[in-house]
Image 1 (spheres, rainbow, N blue to C red):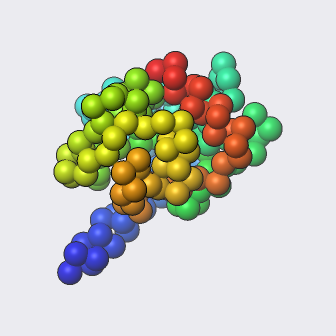
Image 2: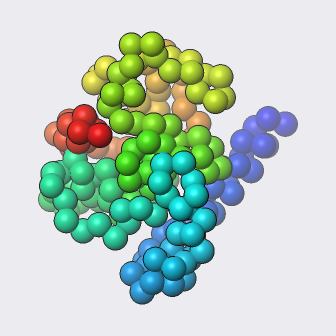
Length: 178
């Protein structure tokens, strides 16, 4: 029963992500449609935790490789960073917000500002999942394998990323500025 519910939630979220990607590919910058400046998803996102789901989606100038990865999931060589969801052109900001403070959509996408991740008190998520503070190494495991510092497996809603060591370090360095 529980696995059927998880599958259902996964497929709903995959559908929403699909709508985002289709809208992005077919005219996001025109201003209307699902995700444009005046679109339904942008208005819906403006009230969500983290300052809006679409904040930063039109950003094209990046100060670092880590920032480019955070917003677009693309590295400095222009290569799309593969992930288990097959998403392209989106990075951490899509779910965690442009300010990395997290959002609540179909599930909780937590605050990933570095100062929050390394809080010595650790973390208790709304689901009740607990874990100690992240280190650089445990954060790398989180991104690559979907496992938190206590060894808890993340939901399949969190994509696992196939990122080079250098790109992962650049992402961490960017999060340290948040």
